[in-house]
Image (tube, rainbow, N blue to C red; front, top):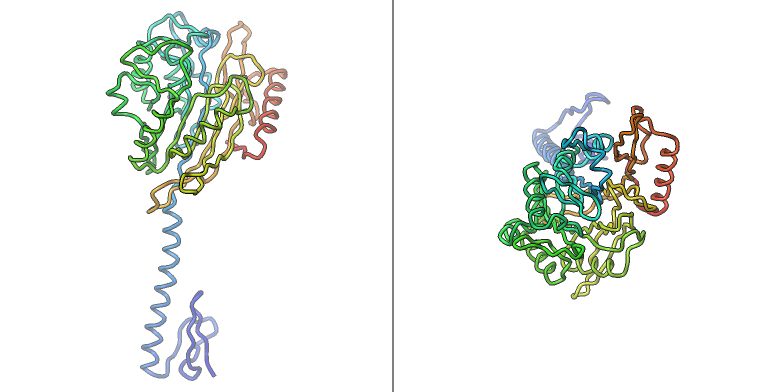
Length: 409
């Protein structure tokens, strides 16, 4: 006959006559032989060590999977009415109220990126469409709201010509942003591109390109990154060589006001994935386009996939066409396990945002970016007509992005 000693999930079997329990609830044993006692103690200690080591190892492995939460915003526009709305006294501008209701959402992310589709030329004159030139106060308000990185390669990069390119870059740096897509000269591009972002133990490479600049030439020595496959292949090779955990391409492409991506966008997305892009975020159409997982076949026959958010729509603007009154914040959670060279997408989703133009009793307007799925702020006297319009936008987004997780941020 044999007795059975169990220690958590490990067990050993002993001769029944070699031990006697002092009590049913006691873990102690009386051992009848010295030799058996020594063997049992050594075995028990070994099993206890293995159990504790396994448990602590599991906890340590779990703790070593780091998470980085990214949030991408769409087109940040600066129409004439927005400039006028932000003027609080002659020559003094304050855009901070625009983002007061969306800032808590932005603060939940570890890194917030957006497409700055305008220039910051410094002194006036300022203007909206078709030559977007906004006061520096807009950049300051975006920084205070929670933005960390702004991409500047888009069809309005040259709206203030070469001096505007330089001024925009210098202003964003002064305000504490990381920026890419346009450059003061070739030397700076060589030094700072791809843009390497270090955050919470993650190393990211960010690339940014545009299809064009509305026919406005780029004044030397400034540079605006164009959607050129040879250039992008070389840049992505450089990005891979720097061994980041993750590579992101933020591209200005597509057809304005079209809610579906076109064949050229899909073709370019596949090209970028083949060249090493792990995530692709799109801008320019001013309306939301689908979020899809695109898969390509590599030359060796293996497959490679990446999430593509074809267009995030407008973050803030004064555009009036259907669908341009809002957009989405595109959220991505990156996971990185210690000892693994690359990060991966854990989950992704969207937060719908809507532009509301408030007019007070004196006729003064204020542009607000609102989280469309949240309750209307109690301190915002929003008329029912506007509330209904926001709800209609929200429902259109939910139908349009069916199958993609909506984040309750």
